[in-house]
Image (tube, rainbow, N blue to C red):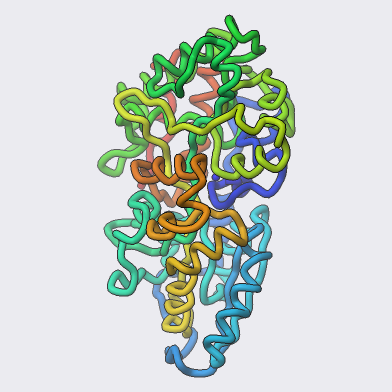
Length: 443
């Protein structure tokens, strides 16, 4: 959904490369990456004396008092939120909302540095894979679960924000992964319905090549940063987990089974083992070279806008599964920081942004899919058959575990998947090595 520092599932991607779901890759990326930014900034925070004492910068200000609320928002959301804030100010003349747009490429560094310096805003947008780290730093204010009800949101979007039974963020928008496929080429290959399980998915990929003459059967990310996003629906569809009882679960039978299935597409020549930097899957989807891929809801809009000639020749389906067809939940949430003196006003502003009416309006402005389930029952989302697939997928989606060391943990996932896709290790060996390397990263 990244993304992230460089890519962490936080937003509908802003660049063409990000929107492919296949990040820019080196031609020959090393099997073992250097540690990511998280470890460095965590050390910086410790050096600067960041603590989880949670003292506010002054006395709490009542919600109805005249005050300025500082808000950080990232990417496209940061650019679009100011207009919403101005509308909110008209309804709440005692509140001035100061929105600061921040690029996703600098968001993580800025948040950690500001946490260490004690200069965080009152409210911020937070990507789903940031939550564990910042909860661990002790800078987040727990959500008032009397003001916000978990049942109002997609279950996994709420769970993304829960650490040790405490919710630290309110879901703002969601995304997940589903299957895009060329229906016209499927019919040419003799297939008239979407695949619903792994057997049918593999059979369709093979039929595309052998009967419809496509160059590839499917696009799956082979290696590079955030390869785990492409593989995770395979794991979750086996009933597998990334973490169990506070420990990595990367050498489980489910992990091995999902890596085996994922790797089979590369072994059989159904998926590319490498892609060029900036690869745009939609170009190959348009020509028919790649007739299937897994991606997020932003590609629905991109296909309709960039390739209108394909209208009626493609569709979206829930991810084909093993024991189930389960994807993962991504997106962004809204958090209040513990040091804020404006928590009451912050809560009211977050309540406004996550209301059914505003969630519907936000989708109209940005295309971000609402986290509040009631917003799917009206307007365009209730009628768009392609986007409704993502709503259905979100109902059964699973959360990505909120880990303080997610960046390091996910790097080990990427490495294991790369070893399998490139034929450098068996699924069993790759899983065992990932389990060992991830020791201590799931705390």
